Every structure is written in structure tokens, then in C-alpha cells.
Image (tube, rainbow, N blue to C red; front, side):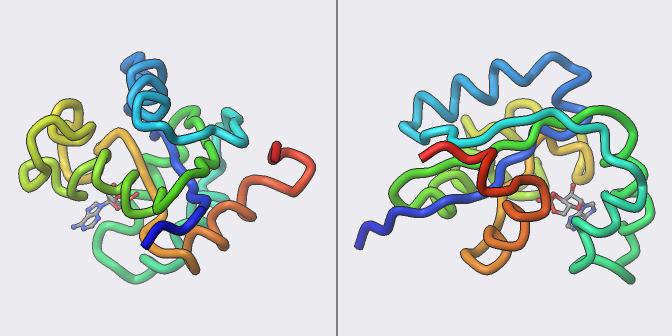
Length: 141
Ligand code: CMP
């Protein structure tokens, strides 16, 4: 079944500082995902904590939110058929060592935290994550 969906994609601070914004966008456009919103933000620690609230209490939470507020990141909303699952396939598994050949994380991630990209994992999280960074006026239709 095909469903038109939207999802949040992030090029994380490691991806931005290593000059991988273009590489990621090339792969997104090459997969027929439509970018319907885009911006660059340097998150504060508090903003990173709010975004990753579901991971609060986990052992990697402090380090993750330090990392995500360490430099600018690029936030995008992608639109397409089954885009949530298809973008997750393009990214590869969270742990780059488990990510499939040819995926973004397999090719560019350097550790489980500095894994270059983020993507929502389900429609409910996508809805929360998109509205965390974008309002309706910032999304083209
Ligand atoms: P992301 O898809 O953004 O979701 C949570 C992030 O936490 C994950 O990518 C990694 O960058 C980071 N992280 C660090 N350690 C772990 C871990 N052990 N398990 C899952 N995510 C981790």
C-alpha cells in the first residue's frame, strides 16, 4: 500500500561540519523525496533536550544533547509515498556498523552518536518532530 507521508530529516552537526549537506540532499532528491521545508539551526542544549525528550533518562541522553547543540544542523521536511520507512532505509540502521551497504550512515557515520542524519521513526513521532521546528507558513504545498 502506498501512503503520502511527511517526515522530519536532520543533517546533524557532524554532517554539516564535514561538508555533507549536499551529499545528503543529493540522495534525498535522487530517491524522489520532495523537500517541502528546510532551515539551518544551531540548537541550544535546552532545545536539543526538548527534541529528544523520548530518550530522557537513557545513558546517552547527555552526550547526545551536547552533540546536537554543538553546531548548526539542517532540518528538513520530506514528502513522498511511504517516505518515513523509505528515508529510514536510505539512512541505514542507527548503529553504522549494522547499517546496510550503500546507506548514508554506513558510508559516512563515525560512531553510534555521530551518525550524520536523523529521521522520524513513525507517523506520531514525525508529527511531533515536524512541528518542533516548523510552522505551517514554512511548509510549501
Ligand atoms: P537518532 O536517530 O537521532 O536517535 C537518537 C540518537 O541517539 C541516535 O540517532 C544516535 O545519534 C544517538 N545514540 C547514541 N547512542 C545510542 C544508542 N546506544 N542507541 C540509540 N541511539 C544512540
